Image (cartoon, rainbow, N blue to C red; front, side):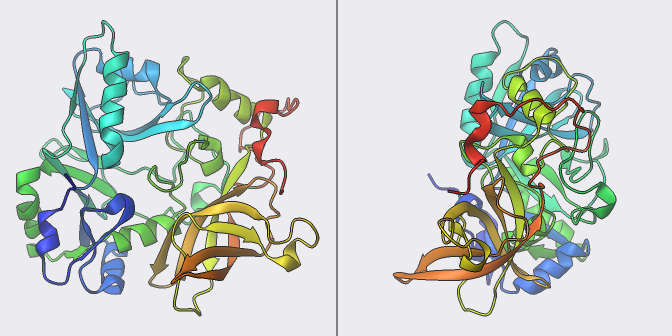
Length: 386
């Protein structure tokens, strides 16, 4: 059964689609909603997200041993995030994580929650852990607040992006130069039956109710990757600059660690994330999944017009206009002009795009060891433009 939030019954609510299906895209004034969220005066219905609870005395040491993050010594109400990786190091699951002293709460995309819970169940063996998929019983509320939850508050996860937390590294700019530094965001988990009342209480305090148009525009502006958008079956964390917050490079072994270490040591991940400024002069902006091509003047000859990546996220920002994130082949020139190509009304539409570098083409992290070595053959997928 498709989820539908009770807040979609609000006057003016327009339903979101894609991974945000089930909550409102906006409530009639997306520009005002973005501005309110940007200035810390908005609440967002995030009840479409999935929630998995892991209890038991072994929960943190166990999660530590099977995921990318060091959570063994996670303190109560301290937020982090982690990956479940394939043996080849590809991202299978992401989860925002906070422990309340009795259980670890994992927040992920709604469609991914059953698979994450099932995988955890298969991996527990004799460990003293209990896993519950509580999606539907708990609802997340988004707030533009940059503090951890307190003992008096419900379970709260605070987004640490774009800080480089202990054990992580970065491919993009340092925190002080990163466009995501000013973004404040946290998720508060409340019983699903209390969702409307919790939102109403925040509105009574002067906050505006905002939709996912606002959250997506500000997320894209912050270069913040997302499971339901930037991650495909080939994605590795280095391509998305996601070693900042979700990977601990010095922790013990876990599935996929070899790829994490190899690409960090040798550099040059196959693809790279970019931020796109899209031409807004037309009436149509492309949808996620659209093909990204080189503009002819940027790649004369055989490479002209060839697909070099795909658009992963797009939104109209209240100040920047149409913006997006895209994943491109690694050695697409950083100054190359791009075209985003999609279909609208049965016609092919080309939208010009200018890129800002998130992960540099050289693919070298801020603390990569000096000894470089040769690029691993199995990771050469992004070497060519053709």
